[in-house]
Length: 275
Image 1 (tube, rainbow, N blue to C red):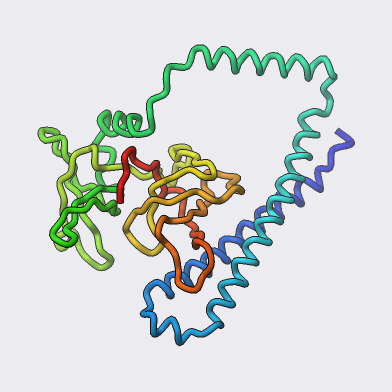
Image 2: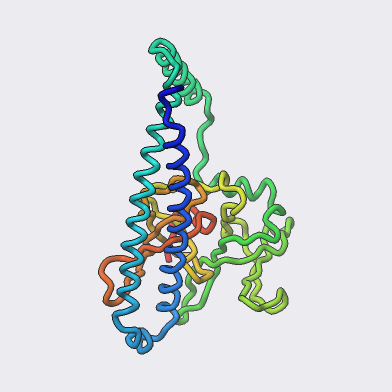
């Protein structure tokens, strides 16, 4: 392996790690500004002047530059890894490996059972072990009164218990600073509950491609809305999603805002979703 650039691979790994940490700092700054703007009245926002928008624009430019650098170093590292994997193998050995992999893929596709839809898979998982959600936060579809009518809304709640007789969850709408006795409680059937991916187990999270419609927690809130995946540079399942939320236009800002949402706050869009 004398021709392998070990030092170059190590440098690329370190640089990717540094860039990701720097991106996280920039994203946090962006989200702080968006939160500040979303909580301020129009009069207060106007007093901010151009300085806030200028800073926000600079942060987005900085985030874009860091992301492009990460892509560049990641591509370089992938090429170096390919060189390592290919080194020492003869043409005949490489051909044998390729044929073997193709056979495995064919056998797997022939033997795999039909996949359940995402909704059916979630439902089956909950039915098999509903008590596993006790103490966890989930997405719940509740009814709220709007202009003498009932409207569905998705919110983040905590699972308190599961009633096996009625097949319903008892859920708590937690507010910051509230104890368990003061929060709003709901009893909902399994069909109106969606578990979130586990933060400590990224393998439980689905991988949504660019352009996919999802249901996600809007930053700095406990409400979920329909959104579209727009980022193309998620390298790991633990990376944030970059989303565009429906009806999220900001006055005076061109285009739709793109917001970072942690992977464990994004779930598949329920079939027939209306909100």
